[in-house]
Amino acid sequence: MKRPVYLVLGAIVAIILVWLGLRSGGGEQTAVDLIAQFPSATTKKPTPECFSVTDATIAGQSMKAILVKDPAQDTGLAGSRLVYSLTVPEHARLKGNLAILEKGWTVPGDGVLFRVLLAPSNLPPEEILNMPIDPYGNPKDRVWHDFDLDLSEYAGETVELFFNTNSSLPARPPDHNGDLAVWGALRVVTK
Image 1 (spheres, rainbow, N blue to C red):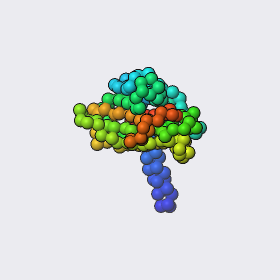
Image 2: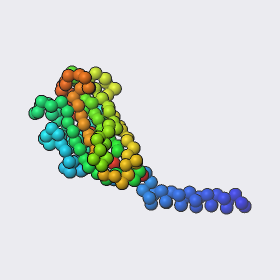
Image 3: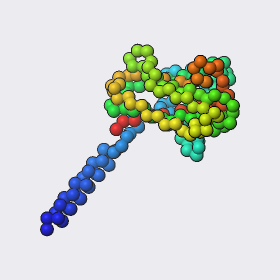
Image 4: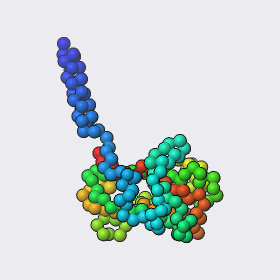
């Protein structure tokens, strides 16, 4: 007799927990879609024409992305910078994916260095991500590379996020071959 009562109470508790999880949205929510906010980026260097929003497919997986056209083609410069200003929400994480377009995989070159920097309230930027990707020299780089960065210590602050790409690694002469960098599904999420 007592067993059915416990089973019924357990089922009711389980239903309530599921309902509360669904009602609150459960997992993460996108607070800022940086791809959708691309037009409001505060800085696009060396020129705004070096950037465009595209649908990028890497190893069969497609997503909205910001393509960085090799700035050296137009300006002779070996890097780019895209900057957003935003107020960091509670429990925030910066998420995204990095890659080089597939047509750059077979072009002899030395890849691209992707960097993310964060600058709170008029302080110098601090590097929070540094990732070289070289799909010509390293076939394992022929995928999207996920990143997930904790921004929770900056909750409530207005910060600048810098998305930099550099042709080649530091201390190497710039090599622009195959530098078709894409920043995929850039977003700030909360839980």
